[in-house]
Each structure stands twice: as C-alpha cells, then as structure tokens.
Length: 244
Image (cartoon, rainbow, N blue to C red):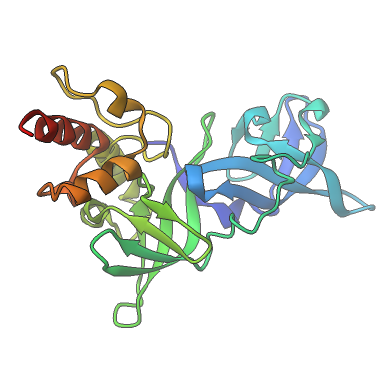
C-alpha cells in the first residue's frame, strides 16, 4: 500500500508541471461516494491574482500526488469543469460525505465520516474513511472503503465485515486496507472487484450490483449474507435457486 493521507491535507498543495511551473493550488478534493472514487480537484489561482480558478483538474490528468505538490504533465492538464453527471462541475449535493453517519447492514451505528483517506503516488485513489465514533465511543478511527450497500446525503450503509479491519491510526491502516481487499475486493462499487471463486456459479448475477444481490439474499433468508463478499453472494444465490 502506498503512503496514506487524509484528503483534507491535500487542500492548499501547489499544482506543478513536470517542467517546474506552478500553475494552480488545490482548493478542494471532489469525491463521489456512490462509486467510492476521487473525481479530481477544484483549484485556486496562484500568485498576486489568487482566487478561485475556473479550470479544474480531473484525477485522470494527475501524474502523481506527494506531500508537497500535485504533479501534472503540463498546463493543458487543467480543463473546463463541465456540468454533466459525474463531472467535477456537477451538482455536489450527493458528494458531501463529510458528516454522514456510518451504519452497518446489521443496524450498528459506527459514527460519522470526518475525512476520506487517499493513497499517494502514481495511483491516486480513495481507500478508506476517517470516522469519529458515536457518543459513547468518540475516538477517531479508520475503516477501509467498502462496497457500500447504500449511499445518501445522510448515511453510508456498510457491511458488518468492515468492523474487523478498523484501525486507530494511519500507521497500520495500509495493511488493513490490503487485508480487506484480499477478502472482499477493492472497495470500489460497480467496478467488478469482488474476489473470484472457483466453480461455475455466477451467470448473469456476476454483472449485478452487490446491493441487489444482498437484497435478494435477504428475501431468501440466506444465512451469513451480511458478511459475504459479492462472489460469495453470487454462489449462495445460485445454490439456493438450484434446490428450489
């Protein structure tokens, strides 16, 4: 796992080109909770005429992110923000994950999101959440980014299996993320990331979302469904239909 950093710590970093030109400053990090991914950065101007910049930086145009700067190939990496679905300029009402409640699929409230954890280096991605615990446990801790079962402006519903991978600081969190991904996939909803299993189970179920599979497993009262990976849900549903 690459070095980890809270997303809010990227705010204020200079955006520099490979040629050494200082072209912008990170104003905000744009995150899409429904797909568990970073979209990019809004920007401020640098120098005497500082202020909000109309152009933005998409995550695909980032060469790397370090603790001191965001590196791009050249000034052409900055683009118009756009206003379509999934763009940086789209309405942000569903993107404000900070302050959202985190609840397991068994109804246990873990706390509220205080930040998004990202990995640095050439591959820049969201890998987890920093969470402030509920009133009776107000500590801060870190949880790997799961295949979320539900996302709204008020709450994130996560699998109960996430709880065993919670860590109290970023020092050991990279290992927890790697372990979670080994057991449950990469944690990015809708990217076909669940761990593969042997056998001929699957079929059309493999292309369905984990939340849809879980909903059917609940209707069929399949035991242990709350801790299953997507691949395991596919297999369990296939087995259940086979004995009907």
